[in-house]
Amino acid sequence: MKLLKIKDNSRQSKEVFSRIENVTGRIADKTLGQLEREGIFVFPETIKDAKGITRDQKMLQSVNDDYLSGNVMGFVGRGEERLVIESRFCGEGEDFFLQYLLETVLQLPNIVDFDSDASQEDRMFNILLFMFPYYLKAAMRKGLYKQYIRRYCNDAHVKGAIDIARHIKENTPFVGAIAYSHREFSFDNSLMELVRHAIEFIRRKPYGSKLLCKVKDEVALVVSATPGYKHSERQKIIEQNTKSVVRHAYFKEYLALQRLCLLILREQKHQIGLGSKRIYGILFDGAWLWEEYINTLIGDYFYHPMNKGGDGAQRLFNGNIGLIYPDFIGKNNEGRIIADAKYKPVGNIGNRDYLQVLAYMFRFDARVGYYLYPDSIGDDDQRLCMNSGSTYEGNVTPRKDVSVLKHGLGIPLGAHSYSDFVAGMKKSEQEFVDDFRE
Image (cartoon, one colour):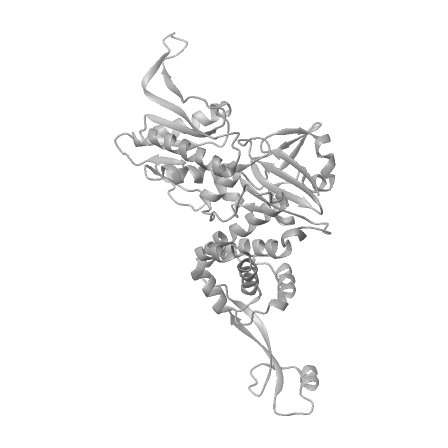
């Protein structure tokens, strides 16, 4: 297998990508929307609503003799070639940071030893499996998926169109049964059968039962709704779902689940993409993961408007004008704080970021703002006091009552194992949250 590892938001010479030219040729200068249609799985499932990426953003963009990677992490493959995009906030030879974000945000069970010698291929495949409960739960909030299907029957209770050719074939000599078919609105359809096949596939894994335990009610509903399930028909169900994708906007969560199930069942472990000319893979929006991770730490002290879910929308002006979604709004009305999660190094937090947070602070009468960023170099917090006065009058002075603070969460680099990394993160989280407790 030919493998290339790069960092997100990095710049590499095109010569570096020559070893995986089949992958590069399919993804270079294509938007995430185009890659999604070709088979790449992008998380979160509605990238048009994600914070840090858009459908027009390019995963790998040509800049003269270099390729510039975007704000996504994950892997992409074609045949036996793999491109792995790691977080820029991880050490060399490991990407514990991405693993930790996925485990914390998606509440993945701690059932896989990341310190083992499992191949990169196995790890990426495990991520697909771990995401299944998240997507199953999201889809099942809409209820079981129901659609019209055609049933082919052969009995004496005719309630549809008689199939002459099949009747002659199956009922000669005639013994009272008649071959016919009819359409019915049923839960036991090709999509629910696909989900059932994915469930049974995961259940057979050593950790499958523990993984599915988090969605045992949803699994029970799927099992009861698919009495026609047959293990031998897996390939048939895969082909049916490949040809007939979910199109109704109301069931967009089922579309995401359908795509994930297809990816899991097609790329079964060591056969992941072998002998295939098509592109495949999974990408994660780093900014979205970071923001949701920060919310798990400071959610007790802040409101968290969510653009993706349309929750907590605010307006800058009266008349319903100026829609905004601040990342975090402090719950203390007397000493209101505005915080903005930034998945970028502290040196990259600049003018546009300042203007955004200051506008939010002005809107909510806040005198303190925060930038919350991953700190991989051990910087001390930096407080920026807002100026008053003008250079024209020569009376510029810093104000003591309005400031923004760059508050980093230390990312432990050089950890020898995933367990050591987790221990370091827990310590950093404690120090990070103490600032808000005070």
